[in-house]
Each structure stands twice: as C-alpha cells, then as structure tokens.
Image 1 (spheres, rainbow, N blue to C red):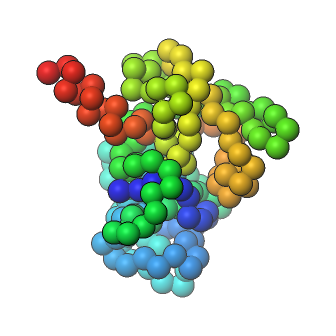
Image 2 (image 1 turned 180 degrees about the vertical axis):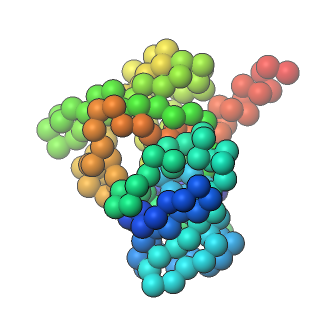
Length: 189
C-alpha cells in the first residue's frame, strides 16, 4: 500500500518486456519489496549500485504507461508503507485503473492547473474534492466531468515529481480512490 506522496524521482536505465531497471539512488530496498513506479506497484528483484531491477508482467505493460518508458525518463518512486509511517496523501494500492492523457497544463501564479482526460466509464468513481492518483501522485480532483478532471498542483509537488517534465498529450497512470471502488461494488450487488 502507498500514499501518493512521492519519495523521490528515479531515472529509467533500461526497460525490457519483463524487467525495468531504475536508478533509485539512496532508497533502501530489498528483494521482494514493493515499489510504486509512476503509481504502479512493482516487485523488487535485486538492488545494487543505486539501481533497482523490477519485474514487469505483460498485463502491467498493457494496462499502464510503463511500456512507454525509455532510458533517461524520470519516474516517480514511492516505497510501500511500513507500520507507523505517516499517511500524508491517500491510500493507493498501485493498481492502475486506467490510463489518461494530460489535456491542460496552465500556470496560475505559483500553482499549475493540470487537466486530465480519461475513459468516461471511470467518472462515477471520481468525486469533486476527493482523491485520485496521477502517476502515483496523490491529487485532489475538481471540475470532475464525464471523462475529465482538473487538479491544482502546488509548487513543491510540481518541482519534486515528474509532472514538471510532462506535456499536453502525455499519457499518465490513473488510480481512483479505493473506497469509491468498494462502494460501487457493494452498490452494484
């Protein structure tokens, strides 16, 4: 489980159909641990020399943006929560629900207005002033519509995540709030 508070950014070293190697710097990771990479929960295979090798499944590559990654790309990294860790964002599982596209990046003083377009069938799972994971970043959506939402990104988040390098049209991983998914499942039974 994760919180959407990105711990650090890494850099893709290599991506193959079955593995992803990321420069993770000083993160203390061990084989078998979970690491969210752009919001996708991956399993650590091995670490050393500031790099981490992670397993990739065909399902993960097909349903997320990880298949788009190239050497040198910046990625958001968050190790899994440990008992006693602060939950500063919201609960994320690292299970991407859909891939969206950045539709708007607009400077508003110090803040940045981020607009995201997505498959409208996920709209009932997004609440105005609720929570959404965008590439593993805990954000608060507003102006939620059928297939789009906006978020105000504060300067710290902009500077310390991969959002600063994003452009309109870029694909992003989206994870809707897990509580919304459970409520919808119970309602539909």
